Image 1: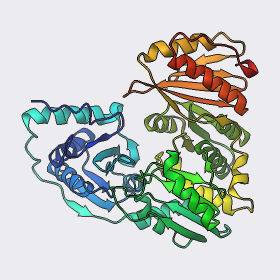
Image 2 (image 1 turned 90 degrees about the horizontal axis):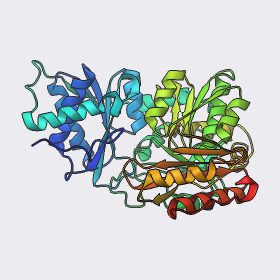
Image 3 (image 1 turned 90 degrees about the vertical axis):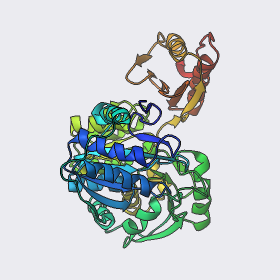
Image 4 (image 1 turned 135 degrees about the vertical axis):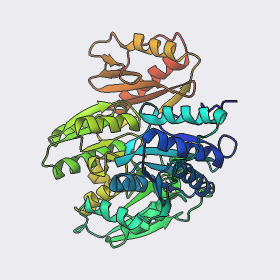
Length: 466
């Protein structure tokens, strides 16, 4: 019987419950299929702190070696450390992690040499097809000569490379609280921050894939409460929160207030443009604040808007030779990091910017945080296209309003905009609204939600031409 991998192989990675949805035997087949599809002679593998990660990554390595590939195991690492290894060693790579998902989950993020993404359109569908075939026919006979499996430590080199991209030599001393959420930030931060003029206050640095303190997803406000309290208690200059595999970083200012990832994107974009002589392209997804393209233009750069999702960002980074890219989800992408995302490098940029002047972080980022936003609001609906069509009909003909369909429906007016996107996996519509004034944002938000949640609700003009 053919294995059904439809619930396991996602758009960008492999992710599911262990052992209910996958196990070491399946991981070994994925390793063999990965080598077949990439035609790799050698690969690099890393894993996070989840209890199942060492065994699953070891099985993947055996599968890869059985197809003749030499395997370098870098052991415990963050996802961006795996990207560093893939880029610096010029090898395809596999990272075993389920990011912020609960402990019973695990997954594989795969990339080609140079950290180039592997997604549905870039090899993942072919890998799935092979594994499904082999569930019926069995894996082909091993290669004539099996590959080797060796260990290598890349943490020190990873840290040194990141620090070579940001000048922190002259920053003022900073007190920084870091919440690693029992994830891989607890492994990488001590090495990266070693020697910097930083008074580090660690929180939940113990590696524990059961996440005993809180979910390792800093975009959920509930998961940064401890960090906010500690920043205030310590009188710290800022706080940093990493997700489970430490590829995303969320920032808290000296008041304990969360800093919008869009503001961080704008800040880093300005710094990267300055580092490149005031020239370059910056990629941002369409949920990102309008502050981002404004700041990019003001600093001499060219903003390029794209769909939500790291595969789209990375594709546009490559197509435009972009120097930097950012998403509202706190993913930050750098040309000088093989177009891959690294929350740690973004965090270092924040430290450099803050430590290079005397103002507090709240004042520094105010220039990059120019609008008020709703955040993402999810609504369960029975007919996503019909609800979207009602919203379009209610707004499209208003004076000064434009619409586009790059990723869902985006409606734009002179002083506000919103995007409405359908979930690919759930019966949800996701709404994001932004405006110059909070009153306008709330009026647009409430009118759109009424249309989404109550079929047939007529739209009514609101403040500021809403």
